Image (cartoon, rainbow, N blue to C red; front, top):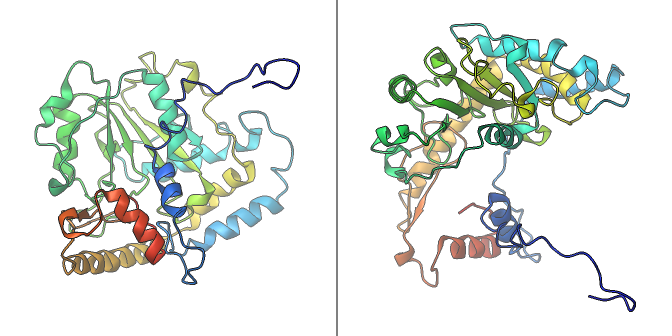
Length: 352
C-alpha cells in the first residue's frame, strides 16, 4: 500500500461489505449468470428482457421533442422550466391517471422520476422505518394467510406489487379493499405492470381506495408502453383527504417539490405527453393478447417437464415463476447451480 514515499491514504469502505453485499441483488445474479455464457456458442442468447414491439408513438414523440429544440440548454438540477412541475408534463400525467379514479389528481400530486428504483429510494428515505419480512405462499399467488399480522404497530406502510410480480397474480377488488379498509395502513403500490391483466380478473388500480388510506403509487413507461430503457416514470400521491399533507411526510426535504424531479434527459420527459395522449387501446390490446397466448403456452409446457412445476398460473405480468425439483436434477444442488449451467449449456438467461 505504498508508493515508495508514503502510505496510500485511501481504502475500500467496510460499511459497503465488499462484494458480499452486492450478491443478493437481482442485477448481481444476472451478471453472474451471464458471465457463464459460452462465447463459442453461435446460437443467439435468449435474455430475460422485453422482446415486444414498443408503441410507435414513442419514437415519433421523442424525435419531435428533440427537433423542437426546447430542451437543448443546460438545465438546473431539477430540470428546465418547460419540463418541470409547473408545466404541462405533470398535468398530462395527472389527467391520464385520473381516468381510472373516482377523484381528480392534480399536477402537484405527480413526481417525474427515474423509474421505480428511484421512487422507492425516495419513499423509504422519507418513512425511515425498519423493513419487515414475511414468508409468502407461491401456491396462493404470494398472498399471506394471516393478513391481520401486517397491522402491527411497527408497520408504517405496506408495499403492494399490483399486478403481482413473479406469480402473475391479479388482486381482486375485494382483496385490495380489505387491505386498505381493515388494516388502515399507508399503502405504497408498484403498478408498473398496470392493466397488463389477461385472465378473468380485471386490473384494479389501488388508488380507488385512497379515500380510506393514503396511497403512494409508482408507475412508468417501461412495461405497458414497452420502453424500459427510457427509465421514465412517475410517483403519485393518491391522497384526496390530505392524510399525507397533514403529516411530516410531504414536508420532508426529500419529498419537497424542488427535489422531486429526476435528473434524466429533459427531451425524454418532453415526449411524455404525446406518448400518453396518442397510444391507444389497439396497441394495449395487442400486447395483452400476446401475453395471454404466451402465458398459456409456458404454463402448459412446464407441466410436461418432470423437474419443473409452475405453482401459480399467471393471470397478468410478463413472466412466470417455476419451482425446480432438485431431487430429479443430477449434479444440481441449488437453483443458482441450475441457472448457471442453463446459461453455459443453452445460452438462455433466466433468473433464480
